[in-house]
Length: 515
Image (tube, rainbow, N blue to C red; front, top):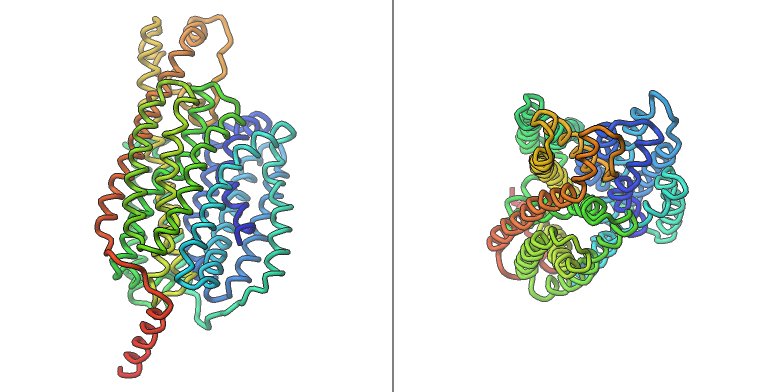
């Protein structure tokens, strides 16, 4: 299962490294390239809950195989995109189907792992699962930097051998495929897909449309309204897509909240740290990937430690420790960004990664263990939906924060060099879009006054970008601080054991017989 989901984790970061080459060869705009990235995340957020439910109804093995096939076929088609007028549409469509394949694959794979291990061993097992698969995200920039020296299309084709091995291992594992004879809640599936997709779209496009745009708020408010209708509908239907009664368990709700605030930082940090390294530190894509490895060194070590804490003491100590360590790590990292030295930053980068490592596996595992009355596929679908929704919100909010701060700073820098205010504002917006969209920090050519001022100001602009990123990383520290306040509400004590599960099931059957 770890091998099967490796593709989905690698794909979250590999495309951003190849973005400049894709834009150059296919003639895409910066906003078009952002849609190529966003299409994957939109589909992932919209269909995760559906993937978890289908794992229950069809059996996790079937859904793992189906998700793997959809993902790898879409990857091949992404790599075969023809140059021309239809290039953007082609890429966006098949990136979206990639996201659909990942949304089917991941909850089913996680449900298999959860079902195989008893509760008393589940903490360490899922710590290993999340530690290794999370660390695979760091391979994205490394692979992307190496493969794009040959052709950027290889970043999609590399999924083919991984998928073949995953399918072979899935067949050899002889996974039991228990199915539930219940109908699929099609109405609920459509409602949550529309609600999640529309609200995430509003958050993602806020940096382009602006927070004062009617379209931005129409998407956000409209999507949240559809999600409210979805919740009301699910409470009334006989076979819901998501069993919302799991949120009656305070521990499950706290786990979901802590995951939400942790994921505001976890996925966005890949993008912001990678672009910062390439722009402010003048690092190559491969050097930027090595910069991220400091984060994953801390993450991998802490994820194993967090799993042991969960098995021995329960989730609350691990969640509190992770939020504190992560908040301190991100705050110290933010303070060092303006030093423009990768060597001076690595302890704080690793500390931030350790904080996320303490949180991710314990919160996800404890949520599954606490939700006794719901199926594993269903609960993993819920927790992964929360995680991906938070990641989309984090990218949007922090991206907008970075864009506005960077534009203001570059505008001030250009004005101090004699550029008129109107021209400085326009050029600053273009510079910010190029840097944040493609990590493009090339020195401008030309003999005009603007180009000359830009060449003179490049070192200042790199510092402007570092200072703008400080606001983003401080924001991540604040998110983890809020997560700590949520963790304080987690009930103390261990999660249920296998005996507790059997007792709860017996009590439920007794109640059913009595009624």
